[in-house]
Length: 168
Image 1 (cartoon, rainbow, N blue to C red):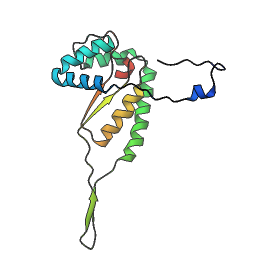
Image 2: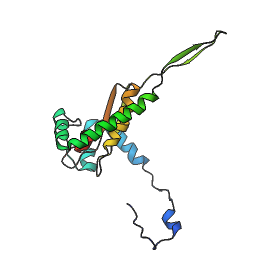
Image 3: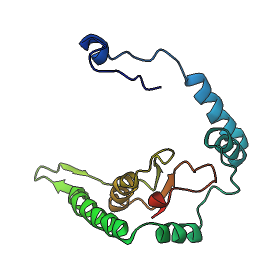
Image 4: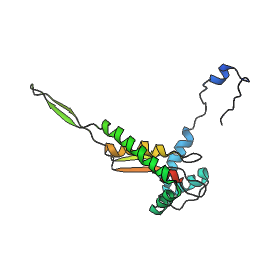
């Protein structure tokens, strides 16, 4: 819970203190991981209902849902997304590294081999707020790096729908 602090009612020390949380969630996390390992998608559906209050029948978004989301957002927003994507692409394509081999005259061979990972998993917040920038900033560099498969997850709303700005 966010603590609300009113100006003049608290000292600077109280306002700027950075207390570390003292609770341990490792047991709960381990339990969730073990449940998903044992029960697969069934466990994911149960957690979605428990935490997101959404009863899902599928974990994948359909093309129709994506098309619907695109139709729900303002055309100007789509233009802004496209511009942002191009800017991100232009930046990250300059970070691409290539493999190389150096053959020294003394018979020394050295080099660097760049091998992109095959798959990437992306988490995009989408519960009470939507962050389409996270979709762009995570997926575009992964594609440029040569990642073949990208899976994105985001929480649905209570109707089981993904925020349209995330899908767009």
